[in-house]
Amino acid sequence: MRLTRWWRRRSLRTRLTVIAATAIAASVFLSFQVASELLDWELRATAEDQLRADSRVLAANAERAGLAQVELPPYPGAGRLVRVVLPDGSTRTPDGQPALPPVSADAGRVVQGVAADLMESGDSDDDGFFVYTLRAGGGAVQVARVADDSPINRFGLGMLLIGLLCVACGALVGRAVARAGLAPIDRLTAAAVRVARTRDLDADIPDEGGGEIRQLIRSINDMLAALRDSRLAQRLLAEDTAHELKTPLTSLRLNIELLIRLDRRGTLDSALPSESRTRLLHDLGAQVTELSTLAAELTDLARGDVSDENTELLDLADVVVAASAQACSRMPDVEVALDVDSVWVSGRPAALRRAVLNLIDNAGKWSPAGQPIEVRLRASGASAVLEVDDAGPGIDAADAPRVFDRFYRADSARALPGSGLGLSIVQRVVDAHGGRATVARSARGGALLRVDLPAVR
Image (cartoon, rainbow, N blue to C red):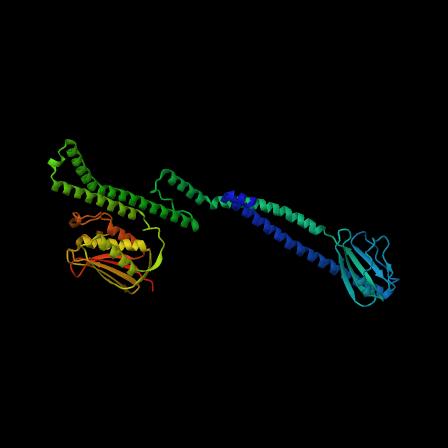
């Protein structure tokens, strides 16, 4: 756990340096192991070949002169050791030669003629020997050599020094590579810190580097562009909201100031007849209702992602029927004619119901008395098609492209109640569900608002 915490606290540059040094150290260690085994195998094979050659020479002499009379080569002081094993198990060795290990049971079988030869090795720290036993003259001859590990030890020491040098060089190279490789990241970090400090979202980060670095820089620039668009949309929403609130608030303030002024003078009853007072109170109520509607629609619009409710599989026909019932309760004088088929979609129920309700409310403002609003829902290919048809004056061609814009109201609609946000919320809901909203002229001369949503088969 401590090592994990320590590692997580290190910088990326330090991590790369440690990884590079560790990789080189592991490579050197593995190379040393392989090279040591190969060197040991080669030295052992060479020593055994030399023992066999010397044994054959001594065995040939023993065959000619006999084991008891064969002349043994003098001990040179180091290196090769020889011994003759007679048939009775006794041995002969050159004068002054160090003692060899006792004749083993396996070597005894060679003496007895059970086996032709035998290669033995003893690798103890005190007396390591290679002993080759060869059958000759009714007994056997043995040639031995002390196992010498000094070449391998010298080789290991050399490899250790080289390994340490390689690890040090690897750490330096890893540090340099990390510094060069992370230079774009350092510049990217400095640019991001500068943007965070100055709040200047217009300062794009220079596109440099390659591969993942370039992709990261482009992603951050895309994020900055999205933040710029969000800030612009926020500012425009605030400006549009202030503009839309100005008129009803001004009218509300003037009417309330009039009532207060007349009340202070004590001339409220005489200066404001009952009919005028009723009309003024009615205007005040309408203005308060308009402000409440505007506040509710601004709340819905400010949510951004329509709502936080989960997406589920639902029958859009149920949503349309529920929204129509709610619209009829709000507009009792307006008739809604339903012609809906069952079409399943994947969506957010409350958001879709609000969008359908806004479409019907919009049509209710224009639908003349005695003319119902026709709401149709059907499946068309891979889409669920919802149409809201009214018999009103319709939408002018010049206004059609901006019908779904925030706060937009045609000149003919400015005298009607509303904030100009209803269809904008419809557009937001439809976009969030991967659909499309369009407007056209209906066969009855009014507006035909159409929503296409992906259907689930």
